[in-house]
Image 1 (cartoon, rainbow, N blue to C red):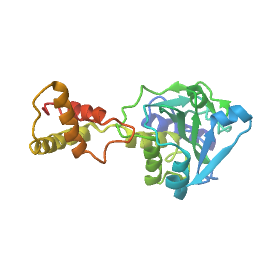
Image 2: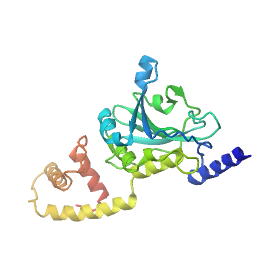
Image 3: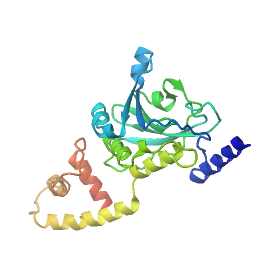
Image 4: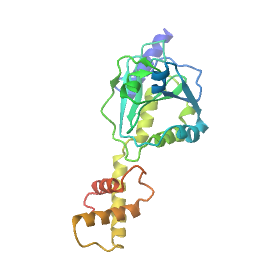
Length: 259
C-alpha cells in the first residue's frame, strides 16, 4: 500500500509540474554528490564503460578544462518511458539534449549522479544512456528559446551556481523533472528582460552614436559604423565564437526602431 501511495503521489506531482510526464516514484538515499561524464564515442570504440566523475568544486576547473566552450545551437527536453537507472518501478524520466557545432550532449539527473553524455551523433545521447537503449524516447516539446550567450561552459557554471550537486535526488522535490525545469529556466529567454535590455540598449546606442561622426556613403559603410558602435557598447558581452556583426543584428532586431 505504501508503495502504491508513493507512486500515486509522484504521478500527481509530475502532472502538476509537467502535464505529460511523471518523476521516478522511488528514491535512492545513496546520492554521490558527483557529476558523471560519459563519452559515448569512447564506449563505441573500446566497448567498455568509462566514466569520469567531478565534484562540485571541480566543475569550474577540471570539468570545464575537459570540454571545449562551444556555443549551444539548439536544445530540447526529452522524456523516456522508463528511467534506465531505476529497476524498481515503471516511470517517466526527463532529460535535456543539446547540440553544438561539433558535439551532441545529454544532461539529466539520475538517482545517484547528475549525468552528462557527449557524442558525435544525436542518437548516441538521445536514444541511449551508458550505451544502453532508452525506452521510447520522445521530445517533450519543441526546441527551447535559448539566450544567445549560452555555451557549454555557461551550462556548467549554472550547475555550479545552483549547487545542483548538493541537492540529493528525492521523489517529490529534487527529481529529474524539477532538475530539467530549473536548468532550462536559467537558460531560456526572459521576454520581459529582453524588452528591458532593448530599451537600455536603445538609450545607450543613441548616446554612443552621438559621440561618433556619422559616415557619408554606402549602406555598407553605415552598417560597419553601427557595428563599431555595438562593439564599444558590448565589448565583454560578445562570445569569442560570435561575429560582432551577428550580435549587432541581434541587438538591432530586439531594439525595434533603434535607427
